[in-house]
Structures are given as structure tokens and as C-alpha cells.
Image (cartoon, rainbow, N blue to C red; front, side, top):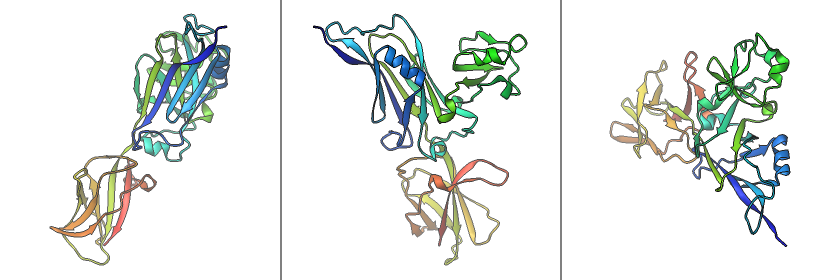
Length: 301
């Protein structure tokens, strides 16, 4: 009697540049119900191990052939992603309105998928809810799939889930996206070897701003120095006599473990060592008019 086993047919790895081990904490990937039905129909199971997710399919132990073959079917599988982290946008440097937009990860032929602002797109499920969607809609292959002068909202609602565009503006149509921070559209097709995909979320990059309050000293030649020479700072005029402001010369990549070691000098003399590094919870706008985010720290000397 021939036996069966489950062989790995796809492996999806998620990495995040913020974390020291690159493994996103609290991250979860959940197949949509339609994808779960597909798994059952083709005798597949979905498993997680740390930051890796596996699709396994039942196969014959002797021939290694799947019990139920795909027979050339290419199928888009939909998954919902939740970061389970109130600071995931700051951590990733992705600025969007999660009520109307989602991070959309689309896997095709490449093995590595770096996520960027290009992956953020609006979700448009109802034609009548979108005032400016009055243009011809095309699919990912550039084929026209909806023309508002000839069709109605009912025809629009019947479009398959996926990524579309109008006037070169991409958007996602997916009725189940609202419950998730991001959506993964995974193209599954027959392959002799397991399909390997590596999806990399970025770490946000922010200017660091230090507010130095001169309360106990009157030093007048202060400088902020990174002893490990990772970050350089320049002073900025302050409207307050007892406050001195330093800004990093370039954005600093947010990191779970930052190697910088900051110290305040007055000329060549150390005034204060081991200054606190600003965290994501210290994010502020640069000014009332400049909405760029900075990470801020306060030091009293």
C-alpha cells in the first residue's frame, strides 16, 4: 500500500530591517477563507515556524507526485497581514491611512521583495464610494476591465480581487482587506522545486533632534558627538537662550539595537556621556509648518 506525506511546495519568509535578528515581532499571516478552501480542495496545509510560512501539499511517498495535481493552474492566494504592533508604521517608515490604504505585497517571479512606499495603495471596493474613479480601469497586464461610460457599479463589484490601476494610479480591490494592516497576494503555480519568496520590510529613517537645556551650566561651545562615528550632528538656532538644539545631518535608520554612543562636549571637555537615544515613541513633527517626522530627545545639563 502506497503512503502519503506532505511536501513543501512554497516557503515565504518575512524579514524586517528594524529588528536585530530581522524577525518581525508579533507578526501574523492569515489565509483568507477563500484561500483556506483552496488549500482543503488540493490537500494542502499551511504552517508557520518563526518568521517563515510554509505551504505543504499531500503527495505520494513513492512517486513524490501530489495527490491532487494543479494541472497547470496558476492561482492567486490572498492572505491578511497584521503587525500586532501600534508602532508598525513608524518602525517601517510607511506613512498611510490604514482606514483607506493598505500595504500590498504582490509576489510574481522575483525571489526577493523589498517593501517601500510603492506598496501602499488605496482600497477601492465600491465604485460609488470613490469620487475620482471615473476612468477606464486596467488590470496588471494592461487590459481594460472596466469602462464607467458603459458599465455600472454592479459590474465593478464583480471584478476579481487584485491590483488594478487607472491613470497609472494603482489600487487594491479586496473585500476582506479592512481587517488587516497589509495584504499578501501570492501567485502559486506548479514547480519542481519549492517556490521561495523573501519579503523584506524596511526600517524607517528619521532625523534625530536633541534639545539641550542649560540649567546648571553655562557652557558656550557645546557639540554633540557620536563616539562611534555613526551619526554627525549640527547645531541649530533656538528662540530660547537656555535651549540648544542639535539635528542629525542625515536621517538615521531606526533599529532595535543602535550602535551609537552619544556625548556632549564643551570644546574638548566631556560635559555628559551616554546620552539617551530617541525612541519611536518620541516622534514629533519638525515644526508647525514642516510635517516631516523627527525623533526627539531631551537632555538637561
